[in-house]
Image (cartoon, rainbow, N blue to C red; front, side, top):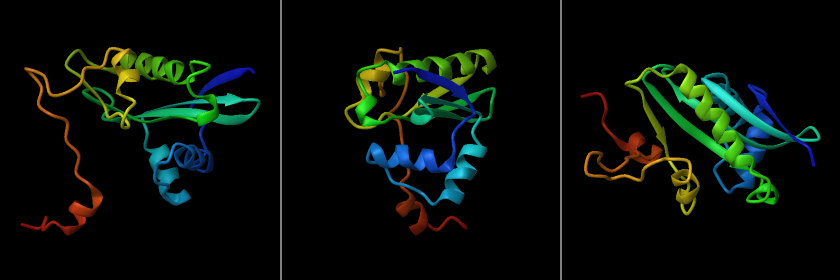
Length: 147
């Protein structure tokens, strides 16, 4: 096995296959391509040409960075350090682009929190930080946002 890591080398098809493999929702390829194209940074892992993992960063490139979609094919999880290597490449990108006032966000999939804690992330809430929040798409669609 020879895992190779690339920057900005992820197709919408492979992105969707990874999402499906980890049990996440899958968008149409047009939406997935737009998400990939609008990412600040993408790292992908490949084994003999097959995409086996990826992660991406979205944000403004200076003050706000959100780590998204860190995924590794289940057969490759917990054996080869792929997720950790992807995260190190992502964190290196952020370190080289963030201002000292930057915020770095990450939402963990359920029961995967320990992976991020080992990398230095802090669970919320803390004495200084409130709980992380999310607005589900279904709720957004039902809201009156014109007023």
